[in-house]
Length: 449
Ligand code: PA5
Image (cartoon, rainbow, N blue to C red; front, side, top):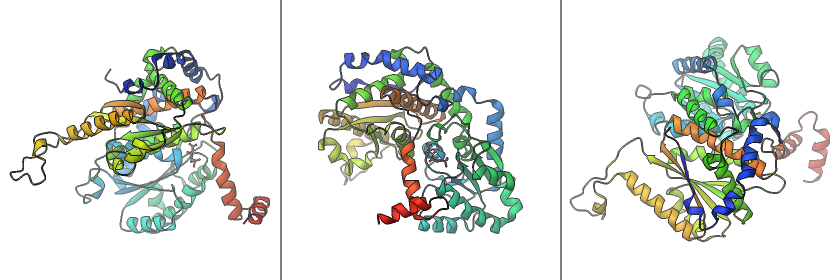
């Protein structure tokens, strides 16, 4: 099987083989616990065998709903926040033509996918509404709880705009809702309005939900092959089953190394890419690890940079700032497109030494040179190589990171599947907005202002 690879050579200056191996039994036990449900958060382990349990029927239902939206809409708004949008955006950005959405309607291959409900910016919502004014658009509204303020607010505005534009009957055909099977305001709204709906399984948390309809419906609308994506995830699911040996269990090795580095004071992990298409993959990864591990006053701080862009902004800090950082680079072995550097007779820019080389060769040398410089500067380096940027390997990468996150959380002895801290801002916001039921909280917070 062609597969993503993990290269750990550039951590050898910082960790010995012994450091890694002494954790192997524990990591294997953590992996097993994810399968047998013997540790914290075991009511949220549906993602562990999710890829291999997606049925043909479910895939077809998602593809059919996507076909309806693709036929009727030139733009589709994905409404959701956190785990209810980052996975879809990560995959769509990684696997779409970066400029398709800027093409004229006739030249475009896929509907334009835009996002809402991931902020509460009045300017953003106003400008989005302006963009959609002359477009045939549809909406995918995603919220597991069905009660999250950001998407609920955006959906209220977008639904109103769509119904005023095309009427209630047509709007109903262009709206899909993805939410809990029975609970929450979105479920009752969708039932009352008669929308096409999909269920987010109870035992799959938001940040692990990209391979449920939460991610798969928007991804299919964007013209990406969800079968190959799921197929890639199945490959890593199978390779990392409960009896997988540590030596071949890449997520377990990654989890052990990052936790050993953390113990040595490497408190920040930066996920590095050399392709702008991977920016949102890193945003998805940040949420996955930040919400899973940032608990009980501990956990690695997950950050991300886009290179070489950010070498010209963050490069100095990474090279010579506080030595509390390590990096994980996502590298693409072979790009999907080919661009060669042309000859120039006058060579005024002095670049003829690159003549005939691929642009990717320059990128790869920047990547290699940076990795070596960072290791020399005291930044341990892990490397994840994708043979190509396609559905199969992105699917593999998704499951790799999910599995590693679960193992890593158990190595830290925390519950990686809850996020109690996220509620704090919501409580204050509702108190300040004087939401019914928050009277006492309103009184307390106002006394502090
Ligand atoms: O990972 C999580 O659980 C969160 O990030 C949620 O996905 C996010 O808060 C959105 O919640 P909901 O889908 O209930 O609207």
